[in-house]
Image (cartoon, rainbow, N blue to C red; front, side, top):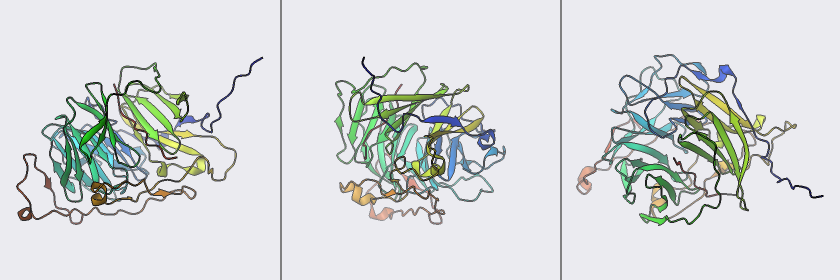
Length: 399
């Protein structure tokens, strides 16, 4: 008789469950724009959701603790003249968020710790360089103040938001860019494109370093709708969570270095389809409950947290579930990164949990225009503010 060998993994039993009803965020009018982003971004302090609004170009930012019904008059972040298409929290400052819009600009915002008394309408900096809508904004994982934007003009621009300057422009894509993902240390990024090609780009060399992948190392056919897949990768656990827009399931897989490389774990299913999804950075999970991931599912009128746990009998800190994770401090300055240096994220222990620091203001220093060369055709402008183990897996969106 032969016995089947069961693969050993501490993540074979990961259970997903929705938060209690009173822990949801209700009466949120989620945007109906037909764009393929997640419409939601979350960090240990805030939940941000792109919403429908009469003036267009708005999104909602709530403190994580402000659960329950959201007042219809709650102040929005309003500054774009066209619908907001993508939002992304800065990994090095929990109060800084970037947005991209149909109005062809990207903007960077300082969100106060306190509830604002009126709409937030003044961004820290306005980044003007695209000729068509900006559908993707992505912060660099390790370098301070480095932000990538991608537009429907098929351009990718890498910015230093501390000065408001474009550092790198790449026009290597012949068609619409669907998604962009930095690798673990930010030395490269990967894109998916309407031309059905996957590209690995070296931004500092301003070139595509890989496109013609012969075969995938693993191929899985999913029984899902034709909606866009939103993938979220956790480098600490090597787990991938796949959420289909318009689908009602979250499928999760473990990635290993040995064949067959991708191992299906389980599926979290609910009755309501998701309009979008946010993914909490690891430093924001609750280690006392063996929570290894938390997703924020957008319904038509609410946002519902989904908790992923690995059940354990002991109440002690589970070292094997929580290796040191990326903390809030950058490991590189913009100039160091531009000079070719690479560094992994600065790691922190999760043993005592994570307490977000108080608001730190982003300083924007505008250079004297008289000391610079004439502006290129794609201009930029800054708005004054008072003061303003390790895996390198890329995870990109595909249709």
